[in-house]
Amino acid sequence: MGKSQSALEYMMTYGWAILIIVMVAAVLYSMGIFSPSSSVSATITGFTGLGVTQAACVNSVNNQILALYVSNTVGYTVNVTKINVTGSSNGISLSQNVSSLLGAGQSGIFYVNSACNKSSSSYSGSVTITYTEPGQAFSGPFFSNGRLSGISTKNIPNSVASFNGQASTNISEIPHSTFPSGSNALTIVAWVKTTQSTTYPFIFNYGLYGTSEDNAMIGIYSGQVCADFWNQHLCASGTVSGGAWDLIAFSYPGGSNSATTYVNETGTLNAVNPVPTIQTGSGTIAVIGSGTNNFYDGYISDVQLYNTALSTTQMQSLYGEVVGGAPLSNIGLIAWWPLDGNANDYSGNNNNGVAMNVQWASP
Image (cartoon, rainbow, N blue to C red; front, top):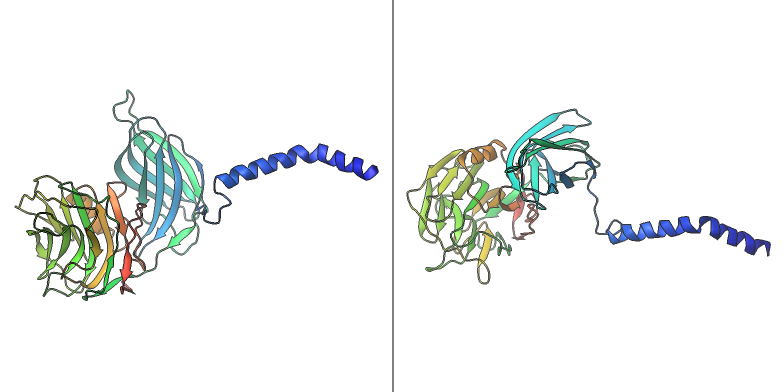
């Protein structure tokens, strides 16, 4: 009788506590906290109006990049103008100017170069996001402050993709239904190192290839960087260095507007006014390192695709980051393939490719 009474008293005393613990555990499980596939990359505190929902360090070939996933809970469209990061361990303060509109309820990805410690597996620091509210009676500026800690560093190997000029070597099977189509604006960016100039090796291309449809592509023709919509050559006046790293790009504003092809910081505005009919979807292709009969021989890194035309100033910014730098923050980024030991897309859009006989080499 005594033991039964003691058990009953125990349950009466601790029963509610046990019930609360079970309920909390159930809620956490439903949120995915205890899921084997769940990965909590950072402890995030503070932030109002503009909230940082995720954060991670991305170590590229030459930079230590802090990626911030920012959500707009202000209730109005905001313009993010600046991000300040101060590290707790090293005390280094960095400021990155941006100009990016986020609608109410929208999210965006912002990158702060050199904000993480490449030799460390964690990061902690304070972040201030500066923004305005265009069209409101008081437009700001406003500030959202918070802290990040315990970020799991995502180590990107110091490697680049090496192609051997054969049909069997490429990165293919890339999803591309969300790529710019028709005559919509686009920009293709890549870092390349090659001595190949006798053929027309394709670096990146997508879309249906035919006489009544266009594909968007960029490659090297006799050392000259050229972009194409089917048979419309849009070439840069400069040439690649031959054996050194060069930033090449093709920026098309859409419609019948002239496009610009870049080699490093120098852009050539083409006189041709193309009106492409780029087709994406069934029967089309998206490939890095090859085309129909045009196979690349050399190294490729940091391929980026945007659904907007980048300006010369923006291209200069990318060039200043050198090989392994982050793409521009939240400016229509569709895909980002660092080619750092895999064919994955790090833009968050899951446009992962499949590497076919590609070798990974030191830059």
